[in-house]
Amino acid sequence: MPSAESEKPEVTGPKFNPLSAEEARVILKKGTEAPFVGEYTNTTDPGTYVCRRCNAPLYRSDSKFVSDCGWPSFDDEIAGAVKRMMDSDGSRTEILCKNCDGHLGHVFVGEQLTAKDTRHCVNSLSMKFYPKGSDLPAVIK
Ligand SMILES: [Zn+2]
Image (cartoon, rainbow, N blue to C red; front, side, top):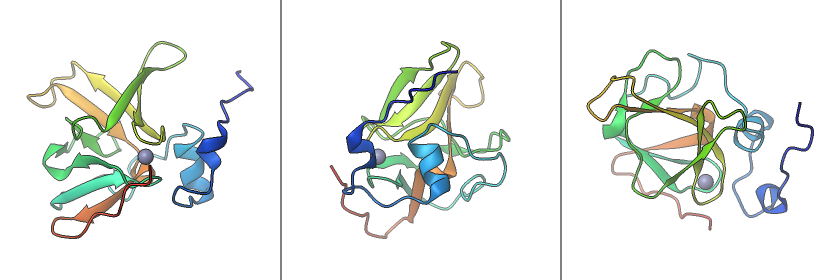
């Protein structure tokens, strides 16, 4: 088991939004929330999902779809918002917030669930939802 998880000082710096222990476990330690219990698993309201840690807009509700996988699923990200990285075991592609490197989840292709053939499987804890028409918070760079 890798013991030295990368602990970048800026990751725990005070400038980002404060996180609960569970949010930190997912976002900073690349954890996964339990399936089917996340706040946004089945939400369909129009609006924008931003990074819980830095407020960067990540996904729009138009890209959200029901996948029955137990986590919020999107078939596209807001252009330039998400970074992809191969997992250390080489089997899955991790997705991270491009602005703050916070862990979001994983992205899968080839499942043919939507026309875009892509599923971003995202932890609810990694995001915060802003309904359409509400002001988005300033992004913490
Ligand atoms: Zn972020």
